[in-house]
Amino acid sequence: MKLRDLVYRLYARRVEDRLDHARVPGHVGVILDGNRRWAKASGGTTEQGHQAGAHKIKEMLTWCAETDVEVVTLWMLSTDNLNRAENELLPLLGIIEDTVRDLAEDGRWRVHHVGQLDLLPARTQRVLKEAEQQAGEVDGILVNVAVGYGGRQEITDAVRSLLADRATTGATLEELAETLTVEDIAEHLYTRGQPDPDLVIRTSGEQRLSGFMLWQSAHSEYYFCEVFWPAFRKVDFLRALRDYAARHRRYGN
Image (cartoon, rainbow, N blue to C red):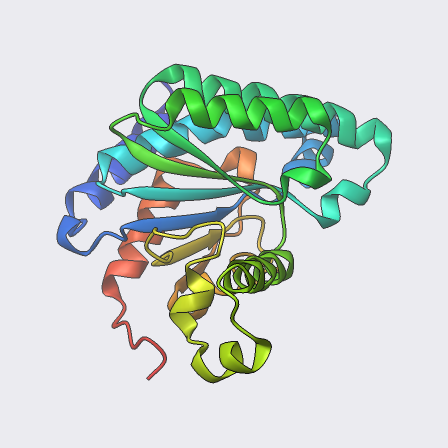
């Protein structure tokens, strides 16, 4: 073992030992950013970057299990990403399909898709549905795979679903406007029934949400990490949890 690796492990153990598990976030959202830039810096292809990022996901979920995180939302493909060139998008979709299938077959996590299925190719839709069916009742971390996801689109879909639901009861728009509550919209989100994310992590150094869980992250804490997603280490994750535990959450106050 190299000295650098030994020092890293000792430091990671020290950070973990000092972590207050009573203040660990219950729901962690992760914006998996930096695959392409990591590949470029490493002299690899974009596809290799996406593949390296996919391999990191199981590591991340294992760290979450070790620290008592209960829900993880992974933003794997945005609605904007669907506009990428076909020679990049098709391999990326294949990597996502393999990753989601692997997560479902692993047996340690529940898998739930968040996003708009209709925007995705038929094969990707099928993989997401089958994964959710296969791992939907697993007694483990709930893993939301955000594929074909956009925060504005989610809110739009929630309002559309709410209107359709109320229409079946014969309610008018005027009646809905008079009684509409925050909870009404929340019940029609992709993550309905789940707790909102306590902590949102974004890798690659970018300091913006880019539309990630716009509704749910209103009171979330944010942690922006400089490293690209494929290079994200356990110590980076533990630092994020440590930073979160040290904050006094104000919930908008």
